[in-house]
Length: 171
Image: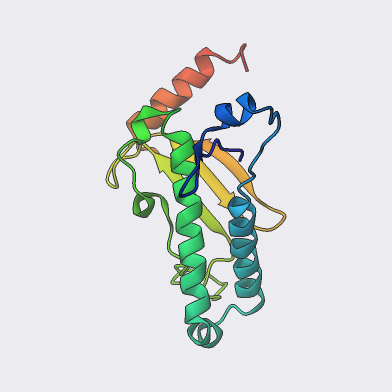
């Protein structure tokens, strides 16, 4: 992301336009924290995939806590970008958009305890409502972005199907 920064020292205070007035025509600052953040998240997910057991997880609790911080920063980045585009997201906080790393293995043949991907759900609804939203799936080589409604109730499902059927020519 390129950002316009306000440059300060004890004696000099200048904005980018003031630099231009002094004949400096190019000045860019690249914030690469997003790339670093993404790499840390992907590395943790790769490591948990290779070591998906409780013993490794508990031995690496500090590593997991660092991952959680980076994951939270990434969610905040998405919120900062999406809220100006979709006002229904304005009430969201990071905790409303994140998923737990532990898998529900009660009815699964796969008993590995932890997810090997990260997910982000941005929706204008509250925890007990089911409104459309945006889903970001982060997994090395398998990341994607999607949108829609997860598990709509019967009345909403009928409305969605009716709208799709009505606009089949547009699809």
